[in-house]
Length: 342
Image (cartoon, rainbow, N blue to C red; front, top):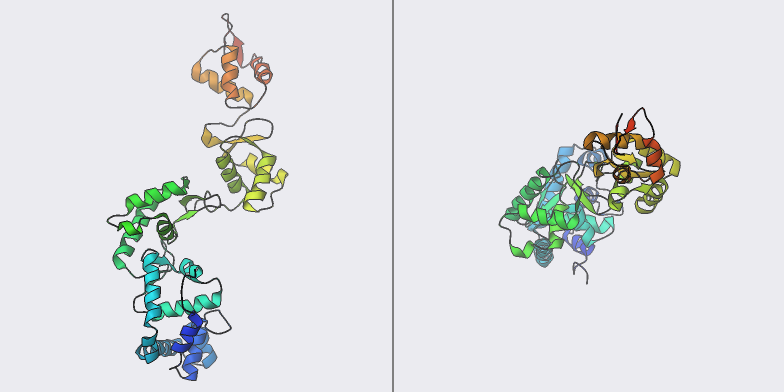
């Protein structure tokens, strides 16, 4: 079932009838209603006619006013009511890009729908700012609550946070105050969240601060971090490279991937080519460094205890740990058979 029952281009064609040839041309250029779908600026249109941008603005405003006073406009009341009900059903405030894409896939039809929204007195457009994208509003009270809830949610996030979609939606709802239950469903909540320019979703479907590398991944290291985080356990660098190519559709050379992992403190080499995240509690260093850290923290331990502790942090053979324990400059074996720092 289509989202709308009318044909936008046919409606705008009927609405534009009252305009003179020149005014029609200005409106066609301004809203991309012809074959050329790029909407022209006031300056660009003024340049083609040799008039000021302010004069173009006057022509545009006159045309909109003329259309709204026409019989043709009155006859299309059902179209505007249908659009109004649709915006209400989608939450009362909608992201412009998402809304137009929901109704039509081609830019030309989207331009005609945009023109209808501009004409309809029920619709108010708010331009994008540092927090929000362009949006259309039919319910001011809902809009204010949604905007505030998004700001509050953003304030609660740290740059490192990555949150599953179900959790971010639940958290968002806790910030929404006194909103009708009819709006509290997953689809509308996601649409509201899409208004935000400060909170976003990464390619793995996790949410966080839009500008953080965990969400706005820009290079091999960021992609590798997300892959390892999703895996939840150490991976070989060749597996990481393969996963980057498969999931992010980015060409990842194995050698390049290895080099990038070595340079970044977020990753720790824990075995032959195996990398883990330092946020999991792993620290950089070879097996000897791990033994030193364990003995400094816990004091003398038996060979088995040391091996057990090291194998939690490094994917190596037991014998590798034992060989490293033989370094008498660093470690000494006590009379009771335990090992301590030399």
